[in-house]
Image (cartoon, rainbow, N blue to C red; front, side):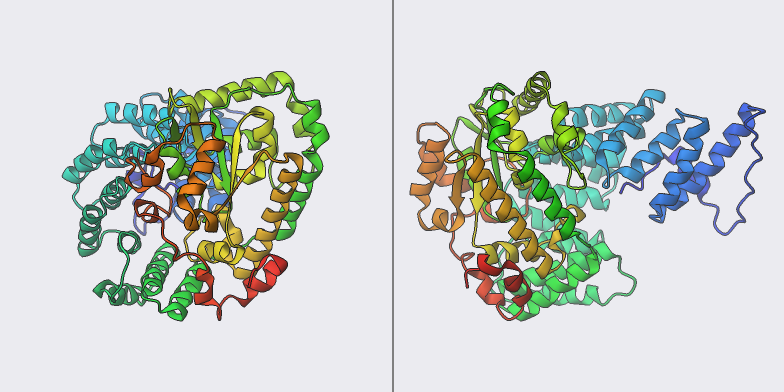
Length: 554
């Protein structure tokens, strides 16, 4: 959630313990503009306070009251956007766009609109609006950092570095500038330099928990570092926020795992999950998988064979997170004719817009909206979105793992698209998920039993896709890839319809950003230590193995 509001509005809210004023009387029948403005202003002050305290429902209700009588109130629209950001990014985008339309010279509105576009992987639009915010007010540190973050995610971390440098000149201890600079350097593979910035952040008490987490990702530990005791001491501090507790537990767990102190490590991974407190409705997800299987049948695709765009440029790399999707993308993207675009949300946005969501109770209406004409329009828009990233590449990879849920939609839009399914030993895959911080969008990762049951649904859906598209989906087994790197890499490039290039064996030398949790691993040659890694935690993961059932290869 975004807690930033324009200083011109927020500065007069710091009233300490002063008594709250009474709500100005407002009678809609009188339609007195001054009375209405006073009432709106009071309600928005309250909405801001609720938003700061993360009482989002209360903040939303107050903003909606203002918008009911002043439909285009820019500040109400803006606060609504900040409430939605991180929970419903599409709604946030709409609110920020309306706010910009009402107040086009407000840099904060452009900044937040740009951030919303960034969250949705619409990087060109994000850059446009954040750059405009900086044109209006060049010294907004939040805008410099936001633009740096977008460039890092847009595979242009070299462009992020001068932005963070400028932000640090304005405020050497700004947390987003320090952590962002480290992320950009790490994205370029400059791990030691990233570590310097993170150590400085810790020394200056700047976003300490996040800095420790990022710092321990920059190297593999063979001896206990001094940082471990410091991390454990931080965990003992009173009144830590949930996010800090999670980061510190994950940091401690990562170090202890490197040191092969597995029981201690798993204790911290469990602590992180408990601090997150996510819940997941596995029954609802089963219904979503049922609906998908019932809807996307061979008969449907036979009837819609003329739909979409025949382009062979799109490549979808799918699978569970931590199944080898980043490694697969890096190998393929080392080919001169392939661009790795990272994890894109575009296909998910299309699915949400037409109603193919996990919360839906029926897919018949959404499917009726996809006419042949609409399929071609959506495909053309999607192709332009991809071409924006790599105008001349023959293949453009979207490695959003959870697109495994949307293979049906992807095939309607691009019947000739390549689909690479990354599969890994089920227990290894789930354990690798469990020991990492995932967002609330991955709340199935909250406990071992739920994670195992979710994996079974993923497996069920992938078996369906292989039945619907026999022989079309390339099954890329992680264990095969690490055991027979060259043979499997050659098969991947052949599947893409491209001539072999030796650069694909030196994927770890490839320039470009890696912003997923795998960024350290893919800077190294292939290693086999992750195969059967779950045995290190065998005493802690019985709920997972039971939930996986016959999918668990013990």
